[in-house]
Length: 267
Image (cartoon, rainbow, N blue to C red; front, side, top):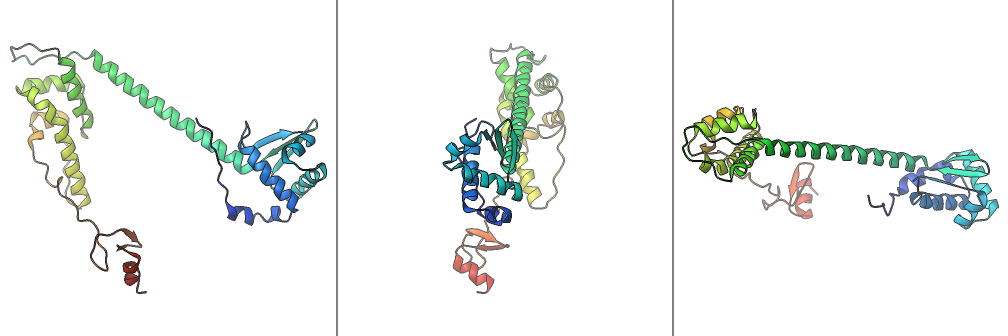
């Protein structure tokens, strides 16, 4: 993963840190420099070294660094520990946010790995599926057997209702419909059109029928049904002042310009 080139700085939080602003100017300058070095550190939000090393890193004298440590001991704006002449300085917020970021990245990676594993398993299952022609057909299958199955599986995956096994439904579909080769390319577009139609009905607060089982949908040639409402377009919102197409909405008021927005607000 690419290294993040910058960190978020919140001026409001900085100014509201009353304990820090009760410290000397040199302490505040040292702290912001330490934050910058922490961001690029191997362990983000944490930096360790001797007093002399810190002075060289920060360009300050030892008395200023000692003042920084003393004022932090009083105001506790950073976590500072000492061990064998080594000084460790930590920013609690930077450490917490870095831990959360790593946790989110790990969770997303696990999700992607799981999805990849499921996709690979599905592809392997398709490779092992045997395509059988309808018993009523005397013609033999061509070398497009696997292509037929993939087209059917794509429609099966797109169908929102209950589905059974791929081989079972494909065999039933072929036996029922003698024109199955011509019908196959029509299934997925029909399913998508009917999904769009039902979404439109739902958005218009109209009755939305339940999806049949995929086997029943195929048996009754539901792909031939016209999807009502799917092609209709909802009227785009218009400006409440002049009736022109809206460019935005604030508190339920559609407007095309700032002037129209002021008119609706009574300015």
